Image (cartoon, rainbow, N blue to C red):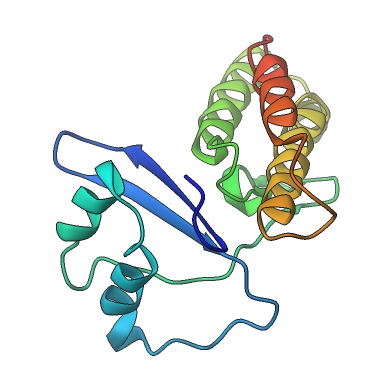
Length: 177
């Protein structure tokens, strides 16, 4: 949902809880006192009705986090010895595509499959193959979500391609990993 310089998104996480994101375009963001996070967030959502209004009216004190968006794709390799990074440690994404947790789960599944199938292969070789298999897919999500975020903030021109880029990314994610 778009409002006056804001975009709001909601994701249900259970029958009673949802994740609500409000992206506010601020060229020079203000530092917000953590003690006022809940009040400030409710004010940010004041113009929205429907499900957002309902969520706003049910926000509990102390459950709000206000933070800038962060993103990155770590350069290869994602491992050193027997330590391997997956999920947000290797590829942090903004919430616009809604697939950061999905990438982390995919990482875990693929890593488990590859280690189990390694059959005595060198661990470093297996981990290199894991990163090679995951890198482009993760990079795609990070770059697409970051571009959509920039468009939503009024950067890089308008967001006339937002729906198209979202559809293209989801189509790519529908392909086997």
